[in-house]
Image (cartoon, rainbow, N blue to C red; front, side, top):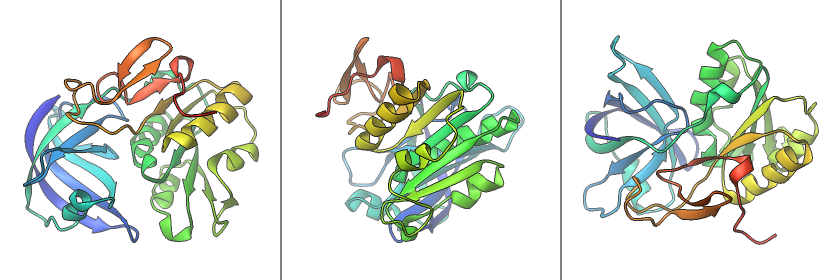
Length: 260
C-alpha cells in the first residue's frame, strides 16, 4: 500500500450511470490485476474503494503511470466524483488487496464479470493476452443501455460473449446462461461481480463443470487496508478480511454466507 497524490487526466461518462476516470501519478504499489485503490473525497469521512481497471507505465522503472478506474454512481460520493475535472488532485491509497494469480490460467482461461465487476477483469485479460492465451470473456449487464467495455475486450483479441437480463443484447439471461452455451473446456476462470452472481458462477462453473477459479468479492469496507476488520468474512480457512486478504479468493476456500 502507498499513499500518494494523483492527478485526474480524464473523467467521462460511459453509460447513464457508469463513468471512467484516468489518474496519473505513482503506480508502483500495484503488482496484480484485481487490486484496488481507495480515494479520499473532500468532506467525506470514508474513502471510496474502486477496482483497478487498467494500468500503463510512463517510465522505465514502473513507478509513474496512468491508471484507469470505472465507477458507478451509487450515492453522493460517487456523484461528486463525476464532477471532478481534469487537473484535480486526489489523495489516493494505491496497491490495496491481493489480486488475481494469472499463473494458474492454463492455456484457455475464462473471465466472467457482471456490472461494475467487469472493470478489474480488463487488466487481467490484457495480461493474459500478452501471453498469447486463448481468452474467453462473459460480460453480464441488465440491458443494452448498460453495456460498456465490450469493444475494449474485443480489441484485446478476447472472444467476448454478452448476456443481458432483459435479452436486449446477446444471450438473454445471466452470465451462467451464457456459460451453458459454451464448450466448457476452460482451464481456469476468473470472476468478479455482485455476490449472488458469484454464487451462481460457483455452482455452475466450479461445482457443475469442475473448473477451478478465483473470485473477487465486493464487500463494504471501512479503512480498506485491514485495520478495522469491518469487511471480514468466514472462509474454509478461517476469517479473512476482503480488503487485505482478498478481494480475490480461490474457489476451494469459499464458504458462502448467503442463504441457499
